Length: 108
Image 1 (cartoon, rainbow, N blue to C red):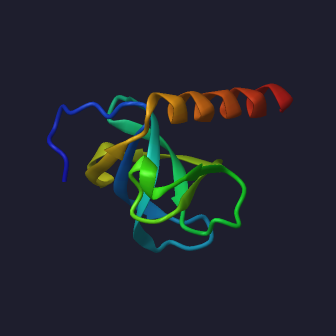
Image 2: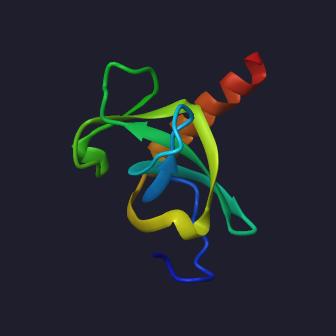
């Protein structure tokens, strides 16, 4: 588990216990940190199903395998559910993610 007091930052790719919406089961999955506030961490899910819509992540970006950041799967987890930080997104990839989020929010 992470140390108390460590703030997670935008663009960190973490490994965390994630509860899926269709089950009560918890599974360890990667996610991208959007922001943290009061030990609640807002994240976007990551999938290795590259057929899904989202922002692509490659091995060059730091991913273990080609993946997709799913901006349609945003949720809040407790800081205590984070096992570790895997890597951080590049500045360009963070800008791409923020731009896509803003576009989606404005279209809502």
